[in-house]
Image (cartoon, rainbow, N blue to C red; front, side):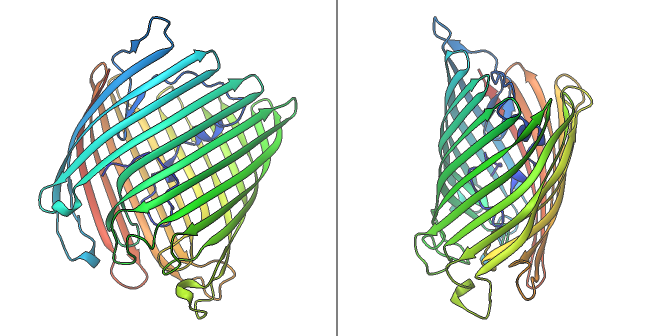
Length: 421
């Protein structure tokens, strides 16, 4: 399935498109950033400038119907634990609408709805009825920013550890409030989400992985011109519906860092600290694992260079802890690069590469053993056929090499045609 908006999907379990999230977007989350009305519209995983908009007489509402047709090929549609299913092809159709509301300057709201159906040629049990319903508001004042999202999403995701494709429901509410003073700036975030598995896997059934995750954080610091330095504290709590397979967890991340724009379209970001995760018990309730407490360094270092509008080059180094299938926590270290080049006003090419390794437990563990190495690469070309109509050809390659046992390699090709009015 195409990658979808990130709604708090645990990074250790899924192929995480968030690894290549634009660092520019991180800078724009600062309270003082001037945010223009978004013109482009998301259709599935594509972003397209609309052909037009249907407005009311006062231009407060705008409506954007949208649709997408797609097909693709998967070289390893079934994970090794499910038997060798070989390759398969799929076809999908999506219909939706985006409604934007602009009651007054500085206040915007939107409602985004999509329904999508995917059918596989040789593996009909993977057929999926997916969807998205998201409400958002965005309030901006000279010294204050307040945004919030509430969303439901049903999608088919790939378990990174095994390669299994599993259908899930995600529910999430997120809000962020930021204030910019003369020298100081502050930001508070909070979110709560629920993940419901609609089918079981080789590692757990459809109840054992269900969980509620709550997060809260505060960030404050100094600003001068475009430069910002800050300290941050973020907390997380994870509660599973049943305690048969996974353990509840409380986590804390403390960091310090800064954002330093080099130009209007380029910046450097550095943030580093430590993360600790404490679980209700050792993995599999076995004291031999000794990983009730996990500790690891946390960092996010990178930058983006945009030599002209529409083109960019990004790089990122990261280290973090996350819940895992092979231990209480997995310590991930990696590097990611991404690039976008607009070859013509109609044709743009995107490429990405993410190399990482995952280690069971953390630094405090007697032997934080290497669990797996992950290689992920993507290449896509998007062509604007006409205003509001675009076609995209994309290739994704994922390879997982475990330290022991059998890994997998998956090549996915997809061709999509989308329209937004």
